[in-house]
Structures are given as structure tokens and as C-alpha cells.
Image (cartoon, rainbow, N blue to C red):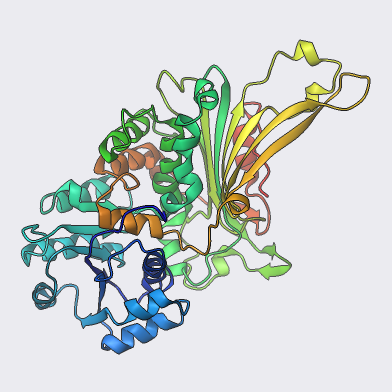
Length: 476
């Protein structure tokens, strides 16, 4: 990013500025951009919240979350605060008096405010682009199912243009995620085998050791499927599965990603598994069962783990299943994409120990240690033709000065420069919900299968992939 041009000056208006998202992620990311010389010196932050306070109160609230850098010292003086109710037209009139020129409106709010805030911004003339660009950033969850996502898109698009909407997914700010396209399309060797002739299946995993913690009220009404699959995991699936775009223009890339999601078949309950963590131990610390956590309704059927088999009906991926899984309270934090290549004819290596070796595979590690590894086999030293699995590993931290990033730097920079490549379009959002809607309907009833906290998830998830003669890559 150091060679990128500076983003133009703008006012970043953060609704919900006193919340954790703003303090822990957004403002530190802006400071990192300032340190890198990637934002204009006139860039300002205007926080909007219902809390009592003033400019200095907001600045003080940020101090504990931002390193004492030169970029923070300069930015701190350009932070101001507006106390106001998100449902009061007077708040937006006051905002209109303050905001001139380029502006980005970041909705770090509860999902119920997304539609009303955008409508209020439009009513106050704040989305008119007469004297500068006007963009709105919307966090997830974008809807809770297909009908609600369609309704929210309709509500927003009735007042603002698609080009003004940035539906943000912080997963897509990770370097390895962005590197998927470079890895595929920048290396002829990989793109040549990126199809059903050579790939057996794809696994996408987002495993977390953390439990629901203090987010019980939100999570109990959401669950693992809604929280992770139609957004995070489907974005990764679309990057793996997309056809080469005719350019790196945002619309060209998003169109190819949307085609992949549109080609995915709705997942039926017999091709999925769900679980909920029970009491266990994680990192030598006892963990209570999900139903015993704070703000949890034991009568709900909320799952903390979801696994599903997705079939993408395109020429490239016909017959290649995508296995997705995500869960909380697991034994390790591990977000990765595994490309499992087909095995070679076994006859040639029958006497060499090949029967027990894992298939060749490419692993794209997103977190905690971003990198790429290629697993293959090599001959063991000695007079006999014996083979052993080996690996070539690339880690970002070994080659680049990554530094401390929140994951929002690239995304915020792209919003300021008007690049929508890493943001979801309306058809992508609705396509993801369409694929999981049968599961949402079926999982409204019945209890999720229990699994011990600190384990690898429910047995039904292992059975799901084992039915096809395959197994999950180890969570590590």
C-alpha cells in the first residue's frame, strides 16, 4: 500500500462512534493509513452517537485504543462529535450543516438502523453528490434471511445508487484473501489446474477458539450460519470459484463473483450439519456450555457450528464439492482454504507407501499466520523408491513488513478512493441468502448436536464429508 496514491480528503461520519467497532478497529485503521501517508491531511472524523459528550470526550474514548503515533496526534485534532438520535430528523439537519464536500457515512450501528439512517441521510440531502462524493458503508449482518435482505436492498436502492453503497466484509481486507486472485490469475501453473479435471474438492474453514462471551444477546438471535456463511465464507468461495475477469475493474470482478454464487445450488438439510458447544476446556481454561452463557435463551435452537456441502453448477466446477465449516469454541483459531487436488493413478506408486499419503493440496492460510503452502510428495533419500509428503511454505511476515493492522485499512482506503472491488453487490448478498435459506427454514426447529468446547466440532460434520470418502483438513 505504500506506493498507492493518497486518498482524497473527506469527512468520515461514524454513526455509533462510541461503540467498540469504532474504537477498536475503525479509528486505529485510519491512523495506520495516516502513518502510511495514504490519506489526505485534511481528512476528518465526525462521530455521531446518542451518548452525552463533546469533541474531547470522543477523542479521549479513542486514546486507549490507538498507539501514540504521529498520525494519531495529527488526526486527533480533526475529530469532532455530534450527539443525536438516529431517528430524529434534527440530527441529520445538524449533520447537513457540518458536512461539506466529500463524505463517507459509516453505519457502525445495530442492523435495524441501516435502512432508516440511509433514508434520513437522503431526506436531508446528504447523499446528493453536487459538491463531492457521498458514500455509505454498511456492516453485516445485511438481513437475516433472503426476504429481509431483498427488502433492505430495495429500501436502500430506492434512495441511493448502488455505486454509493459499500457493504463491508472485514474478511476481505486480509492480505491472503486479496492474494487469491493474484495467486490464481498471476501464475499460469495454478490457473491451468484450477478446474474439475485436477481438483477433487475445496474446503473453506473459519474456526474460532472464542466462545460467545459478552455477545450473547446478538449471537443468540443470529447463530453460526447467519453470522458467517452467506457473507464471509461465500465471499471466499466466490474468489476461489470465479472465472478470470476481463479486467481488475470493480464491476468486472464483482460480476464474476456474483456468477459463482448464482450457480450454487440451495443447500438441503441432508447436506449440512449443525452443532452447539457444551462445557469443555480451551487453552487449559474451563468453558461453560453455550446455554449457560450470559444472555442466552436455552429454548432457542441457536447453533454455534455449521458445516455444509455446496455444489457449484458451472463448467469449471461440475462435480467438485465445496465443503464449508465454521464454529466457535473449537480447539484452534484457523481460517483457511484448502484446494485438494486429485490423486495420481495409484498403480505407479503401489509399493512406495503412496497409498497412505494425503493428496496434493494448496492451503491458503488467512489467519492466524497469513500465508500459502503447497503440499506434495518427494522421494526419500536412499536406494529404494519411497515417497514422503513435504511442503513448500510462504508466510507474509517472513517476506514483508506487515505491521499491526486491524483488517480495515485496505477497505477504508478503497471506500475513500471509490474502489468497490472488495465490497458486496446486492445480487451477491441475495445470492448467498438464497443458498442457505433451506437450512434457515429447517434449523428453526430441533436441537443442534452437542460438541465439547475445545474440540473439533460435532460428529455429524465429520460424517458429512466422510460420506463422500473424504475428511476435513486438521484444525491447527
